[in-house]
Image 1 (cartoon, helix red, strand yellow):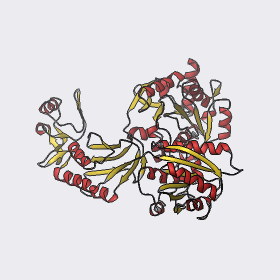
Image 2 (image 1 turned 120 degrees about the vertical axis):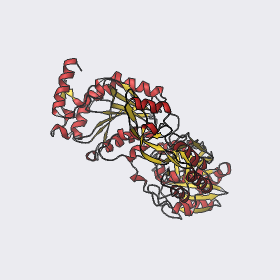
Image 3 (image 1 turned 180 degrees about the horizontal axis):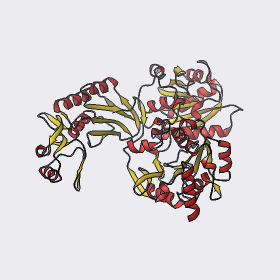
Image 4 (image 1 turned 60 degrees about the vertical axis):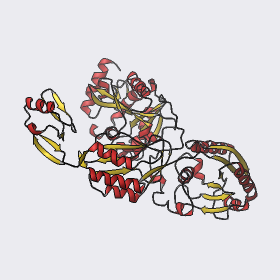
Length: 538
């Protein structure tokens, strides 16, 4: 492949390297130029372009990407069509993604022109989630190189998906006077939700006293009719001789492991009774938040080996509390696209305003922040989370009486990303999307918000919906739940725009007029917007 400037007269059959506009026509990057294209370029006065000339043995970027991706095929993988030199590979169903690091590295070592990027090994994934992407960097590559990479992929089994295998699960909970019945009920519900993603079900529950004999009897009974038994103790396991591990032995079983190098989740027990797996769940598993129990459970449900050696190897990456916006895969898959919650970002310092908090400034008889909040309250969003930080007590007072739930962001000074994550992390499990609104945009009306919601529902919750003014991007916008996990990658004074621009999810623009761009960043802007809205009414 040769890349560089070429005379237009000689360009027929080449591939355009950069988008070119001339006369009333535009030729996009990657276009294969025909004789008619060349003639039109010449008529428009173009003399040279930057193009790619294919050499003998070369194949185009799409053909090369498709060839390499075909070598990666394994059951459960959905290999999408090639486009712009890229093939994305998705999960056909929920399970655990597996990657052969040596195989992936070998593919990437063939030539810098051929790349394969994947999720981390042993990542729990949902149906439809992207697992890997093959990208050919230049417009063409030698066929021999692509075939070598494809051959390595096929021989190495570089990537795969272990689908969840539905199991019958028995649940045992021990009881002490200090444990409320409501806690036991919540634990049973959350456990059932965790299992639902794999199609597994809790077939029965036993609640017994917190002693070895009672727990042993419950485990033995549940193990007879189920594939797995999960035990929640009323008191945490402190030793290999404690109630739950001792009960496994008393029931005729063996204990594989007591304790794991994952926090939260250290106090986990794994054993076996009559060939059936028994898990002594740590206390943190009573919460839907991610913990070490999820790692062990998901891998077991995907048919992966999870013994003493595998658990001992979980220490690197085991500090789950450091993952601020980790997706919660135990939530039910089905969500109503009409269930959209609003996240109102009202935590910033507004430094361009010269020191005073612009959101508390009087604006047509009420604080500026109330204009955005009142529009949300009058719209059809399910509920609103207002993220506060700077002057949080004054801000809470300004929001008093509104239906919004106030969430404090102690890290607001680090930038917009922390507030966005704090707001989305506070949304309930049934949220199909998050409508992100800025508190300094008083021109957005309830009917504008409802138009965005209608568009999101029509897209069945599978699109990013963005407000525009005169065709230019603005705010607010709706992020689908599929992007919630990606928020963890944001840092500093970066909002959702980065995700919108890099995501492969469809973006739908909705023209709502001046309100999409009417914000208050400076004292002059505040005065101008106040005058405009006061004149036209709030």
